[in-house]
Length: 381
Image 1: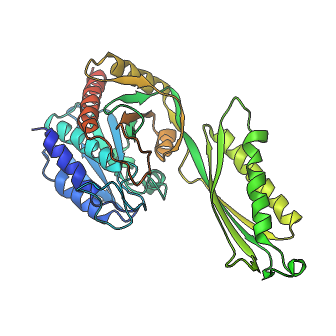
Image 2 (image 1 turned 90 degrees about the vertical axis):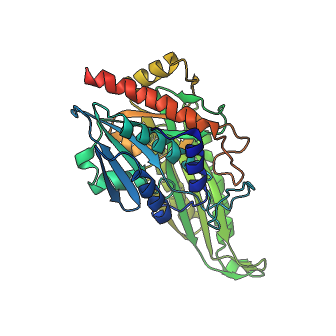
Image 3 (image 1 turned 120 degrees about the horizontal axis):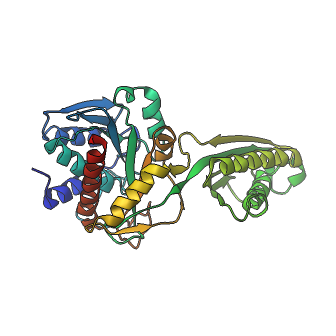
């Protein structure tokens, strides 16, 4: 028997209460393993990868493998929704909706555990999407190799779309990202004697200003790029010149070429600041597995065609977004499609007030069981 609406909602609320940071998802993993163990095991195999889980459904023919991935980690956000099933883990929240992601994946897995597909299916419950390139870690671990999908699918919830709406596009859906970490070192001193010190507030302020010129003066206006510096830390009090400063931020770009161009400009500007202000600038750029999410053309054309023709699915074609997602790494290795699932919330992803509408869960399970059943029939011919 497939999971009922009430059961799916309970699962989502259980998961919502136990958010954990990437590679610390021990309670989440235990919950998922316990639940999956109650599904039909006749053609199912399970193995764990760090705090993640891989589930293999052996197909009746088994000459091809379809992959489905969900992320399982939460964020270091203190929840303020006031929901009766709010996070029990202080300072942790499923503020990116991964509880919705997991619940839909469980609904799909449960359906196919009761309805054996002709193709093999590999379900990936992936840790550390938010903080440690979990998709890249999983792929490079080699533990996926024997169950490697020939094609793969995943979604991200979208507060701006009506609940249950499916949305995607050909080409790039999400941007590739890169973290910026710049540490400036000069010389601290008394506020009354600036000539005897080397002020890293001034140097840091100039670095912030110059980095903001990259998009306006180095990026083709027809293309897209973002440089956001969200953290600037320096000094201890108002009458002491700061000898150190730390600036952290992010790069977003819809192509890897643009991401690399921006990274190069960030590096050059940091070198210039070091020379101009006679200081040291230690720059650390971290991209890891957060490549642009580039949907495979043929797989996505087929996905869009199916969703448009399914009378039970509400589908819209969407524009690219500067959201980052480490599914981009898996799509660089395995052809497939990422899509949006609308959850209709006035609050954005990563907001402490995010409260997705749960009606989206059934809609996501329905759309993907329909699509994957159709895909399975195509492959079985």
